[in-house]
Image (cartoon, rainbow, N blue to C red; front, side, top):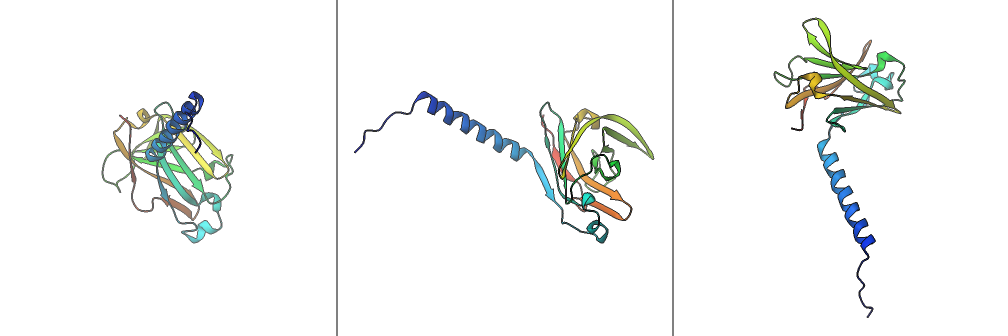
Length: 173
């Protein structure tokens, strides 16, 4: 029977680093919430895959920013401004009441009646089929939680995820 050997310091350190990385990854995944949206849920979306939302999520980015991702069925054309999804934000009222903020392109806009007033900046990017939005929670009044939904609209092609109500997202203290 072979004699058991003690693991080296390097092996122990590597094991500790891998365990820490796995735990941090678990925290990051648990911190993110996503909704799936059926593909081609309206006839108009069958012809416009770049407007068809298949997945939308909310989470936290580095630096205390809020991070939303919206994945489409078709490949994106980032220069086409009219294909960018809106992120609708509801900070007060029920889960189906009117939104108070809209995140679109480089801006976070506050809705005041029929006017849209700039409330903050949004850093957004696009890669393959996913739009990514990052903005400061102070732009939406720094609430403890808020309701959100992703929306695309062009002509008769309209897609909303989740379909009927906002998804609630809790912010970190």
